[in-house]
Image (cartoon, rainbow, N blue to C red; front, side, top):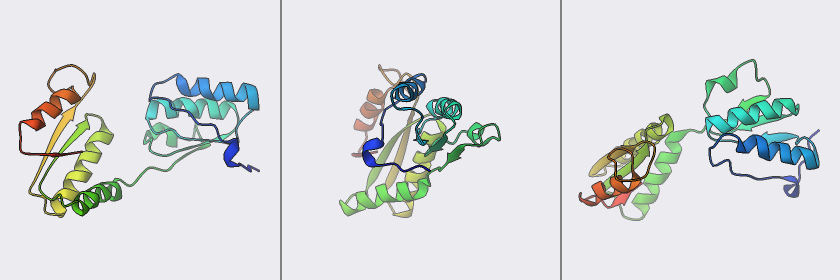
Amino acid sequence: SCNVQINDLSFGDSETREGIVSEMLMERYKTEGAPCAVLGGYAAGPTKEAAVVAKGMKTVLVSHGSEDSGLASPRVPDVTQTCPNYHPMGQAIVNWLRSKGRTDFVATIHSSHEHGRIYRDTIDNACRDSNFTGVHSIVIGPPFTGMTPNSSVRYAMLSIQKTTYRTII
């Protein structure tokens, strides 16, 4: 039986880097024993790592967001994935923009990863369904710094600044 109180919870941020999750879980294990469940992560790498450690601790892992198919394998029967439905999230963003009187031009900056493309498509579709005047997307990829086209948030913002678009997601 798992009777968890709010004060029993441990929180941590993996910063989507591998190695941090296992370290956090093992530190907790040394001081408090195995948790009754591990909730998280969101990114695939840290979640796969957490699944291995949770299995060693003979506990379950519930992941929101990690869509890695390897986590649905019979090799990791104690992992449950609750993947988000992107459409309501995109629609909520667009509804909020509309509530602020914005129905003109929207620019989205998204990562080149699959989840970035899914969010872009969801927001773009919701904007078009709500009759926004224009929707423009810019994709960026690692390293996300400097002034290199297609890799820098700063470069993407400067590109948008040259347009008439002023709502940026």
